Length: 589
Image 1 (spheres, one colour):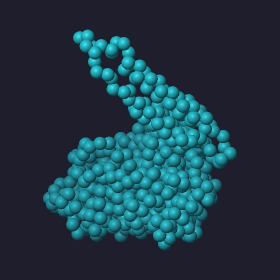
Image 2: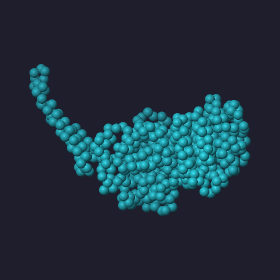
Image 3: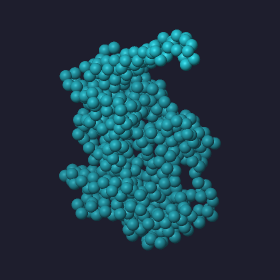
């Protein structure tokens, strides 16, 4: 066995010395005078020969573990000339600690350009040259998100190649090669995430695009679940389920795909009724960093067997494993539905009305907040056949088993709204208008873009982000945030899943206003945290909100997450630098 540095040699030799002492001690005990005769005075049979295998095994395992961890974690060579920076006390702490700060890690070493080229060549040989591309157009489209103008990637933050697996076995083969050469890997579905999740922040990596893995593998109608590959758009699943009267629980960006939805624990408009992806994911098939394939569960709706690896992977943003298949809950659509728009004088009136709706025992299928500027944007975009008051509004969808039940729900909702100065209570005239209203809500992002360009000109940029707080704190946080924007001459639209306390701000700015907007947005997120909220309700952390995660959860919690990351991905190749820092020299937010 060859060890890389003197400290590792010292640890290994220490383990060997311990093994020899342990073996000698065992041998001495077996021949001591006290054991020469039995209490009855008879001579016992000779003792068996001393067993040295446990000690030798201990020494071997200790040496191997020490050498492996030292090589993968504490081999801090950024280049061959870089000196060793980790000390034995760091290694000992790493081995015995449940939570790891970045200060105990060395810099990750990733593949050289030559090694990356060799890895790409080997991947091409496995999955076919037609499924590996480095064309400028593909590289560009996989390097940025046009909707993420507030958080663009660096000039060198792009993958060396895009690879398109066709199966879980392909992904396993790809990751085995990448792990061997230490090539960074970024999983990619639709690319609609907003916090830099898809950025190849470590140049020279690969991007795994799931466009070929887009099959609905099974629909279990009686069990109310569906098995799909990671590259399936959720809208296609709903189209397949519609004739059966079924629907997927989570719905977010119109083009979103299952892999990304699992990665960010996406939710969307229906979450107030069906929950986010973590409530709708039964089981996952995923590939670990070294190519190991795991399945987290069978298909029953409930299980107490083993660790909840499904819950661990949902929301992990591709940093622990690459999800290839998902078994998801599906739901029976209500027999009848009604859509209502309720308009109010103030934001506080809307949130108070929502609280009363819940207290009345009504569980809406959707409950969305659009502020006055968002309603203005809808009017300007002509997304609906009606012209609406430009005041804070609720878009409500409620369902029932028949029209009589639906009528009672509608009366109770109107009572709750009227108690809070409802200025207009407008039920949709028919199903078509109801669908039109929620289609407008679904595409509100594009209405916001139109509003920005029409109001501020073609140079306008838009910053979209999300925060979630308990419902009782929502109106205060929104009102204080609006005051902050207005005081600094910045315009924003607010829309959100008010039933979950989750709101989105789309903030308009020109290049010379960017620093001011960053300060206001920072205060908004911190205001949410101060009110027992989260820095992101559904967009995820990516590398755009890493700094807030520690403020929200505390250093020890993030350090525990980092230890999990190092256990599952010791070379740190899976979506590097997302969610939290993995490099002690990373100075970014």
